[in-house]
Length: 289
Image (cartoon, rainbow, N blue to C red):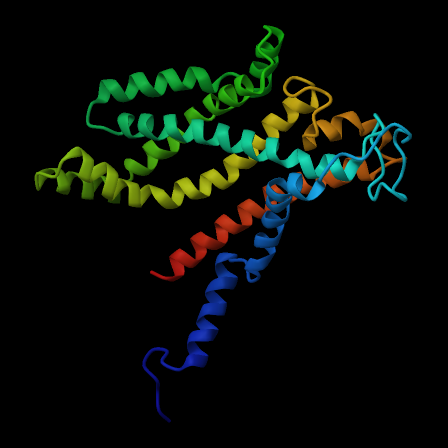
């Protein structure tokens, strides 16, 4: 009876990969996340081009179920729901991505600054961010709207600023991890400059946790902005934005469900698909090491 040392056969490698995937909770069907994310993204990007001119609402009755001339029915204002859905994704994607970029653009440098060798600077930065962290996001947006700042760029900017403390804490924690800290100290002893340490070594180390956080944070930002639009704090009530459509037609959920369920399904697919895709990419990166 011979004993094999290690796993050398292709069958053994396949078994090991399956076991690792099952143990780590890795998604076995990556196309699911791709489809869930791709459908709303394609609708947002190609929708206005595919929709063409708006159907005439002169003879259309409000809150009509799907029928001839209106595949998804009409909304409470008698507008074609399909046309509105095809035009409503751009504001959703643009606002959420804009707020996410604001949070990352400010949170990453502040986190790296707090992780520096100066203890006093670390305390100053983190305690200041703790004050910002104490404010409820939706309450801040409501206060902003009550002060007369209802334009979408105000809401996007403030929603992004509210993400800064969490992003900075993540970056600071990753940069102060024992393994990362040891390498940073070694690079400093070798005479490496700030740009080399932060733009090459730390950027590579922070890529994975930032990507994971960005997937979940995109959902947080999307929920925050959608809630603001749902409450009428952001875009005007005539906007085709998916969150506005849900708010405007919520009373007709049982008589004209397509006007609510279709935009709600697209928002849900956008959030779930983005997180599944990020998890899959990071899982493949770990398996490649």
